[in-house]
Image (cartoon, rainbow, N blue to C red; front, side, top):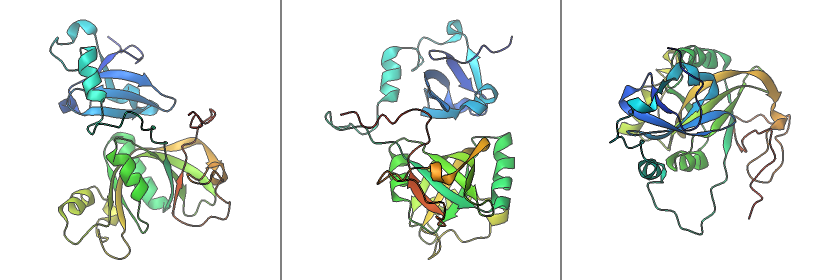
Length: 249
């Protein structure tokens, strides 16, 4: 029997990650599906990968003792690990603009076309402090990628999954993240003066409609990136076809 289209309120399983257990489709977003898994918590699955990665589970096959089977259980899984102050404002969503060598992106794309949630590690000479905080807070910020030889055009998009700022010599975490390096970068250092950040991405895809990087709005200041911007890192706001909602009180 063919899977029905995945909708909010459906129960699912992740085909490539059965250890995550039963999942509940909490929300359908513009670019991704928010699923809460009983053993893994919240995960964002890009629309391009939903059909390939999520298997529909009929309600009559859902165990009564599953954490996602009840509203109370799902609410507990959705709650942040650290209690938020009642009056605190929601963190403003952020995204990252970066540049990469064409060969590295093609190699990563070949991996993640087959296995979208298989992490791939990259190195950065800048300190990705805000992205680190966002990931630590449960976010999976989008990463907009321009190719080093592709001019001022954003041609690929991915999701940020891990960030390690200021990796240290022989640090266990750095070595662990380094294990997801591309074959072509496996011999490159994981720490040192030129490596201020290690980060991993998933769900890398080539955009059907690339766009000029001048469409990206800087996270602070509200100005677009200049067409002559030549650095490999910039904090930006997520691209949206809808008006910004952050002006709400």
